[in-house]
Image (cartoon, rainbow, N blue to C red):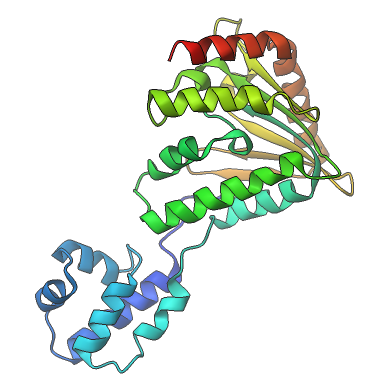
Length: 271
């Protein structure tokens, strides 16, 4: 299954239209609302059109200014940001149930191994830029998700990371240094391995992009692939087998765990 970029959430659009209707009914101009709420004209316009999430501040000001008597303020509870997009929630649910996780990442550190600083820099750098509260929700969820690494009974984790991902500079030198040191620490867990696929190796199947392989508690085999604006969770045997074979080839071309740790340590020292 794949999906294209999603339109703004329905609750944003509905709430934005209600703000506009109440404003027009009360004879309040958009300029007046901007002045009272302390927002730019285009910001208010985007919220009324549902392209941006209406803020509690705007709801409060619009409610008072337009005489809505609490009807606009009541929308606040329905506008709280989702921690994750729906397709990511599906993957996380499968990951939460998994007894084995295998992952290849080509340009980023896997989410389960990210530090807080790396995750915040990465999530905050999305385009279009997300609201700060959404970033904080997602960072918190990502860190909570990492508890699975040390949970009992332990699941098994195997990560192969393309060397380029170790040198992307996400968040700046200090953030990357801490991230590389965290990889070394995580690699000491007995149920987890970290390998690096060297950038100087021969042409390899990993150049087509990242993917995850999961085995659930009921021994169902799943695969997850995500691109810029598409995603897919596969459960059919043909697709899962193809990606499993691809992962096997990548691991064959990757450095050993010991060699990988030495490279990661060297790169951290250079920062």
